[in-house]
Image (cartoon, rainbow, N blue to C red; front, side, top):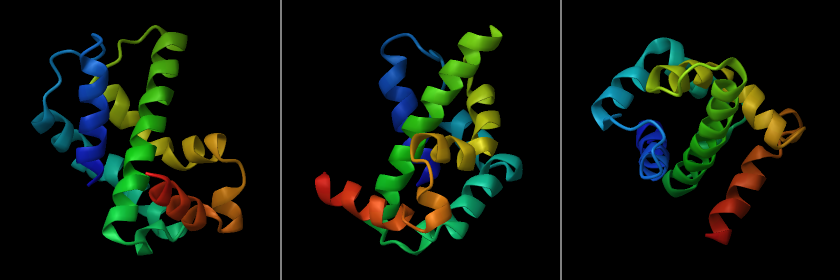
Length: 123
């Protein structure tokens, strides 16, 4: 579900020229690597987001993918590095911090699942 969410976000941005030439298989391979996936999996477990229903988890993964791509774009602009799938996947190791920047205190206070349910209900 994580790779599909990031892939969909990349596809949405590819039409505007961002990360052109990035295929779904490359993303799955990079996102499935232990260094990338372990951080996301730990974040989901610690925040209890992994206990949500499948539909709710997919909404969370979609939100995290949007936040991840926004963060990767900022890193790319700041450092001058090209926005590539490898950069996006390396940024995934900071997913907890990325989420906390967007929603300060939600993860630490245990409110992340409530936010996720509301997000899912709004869609």
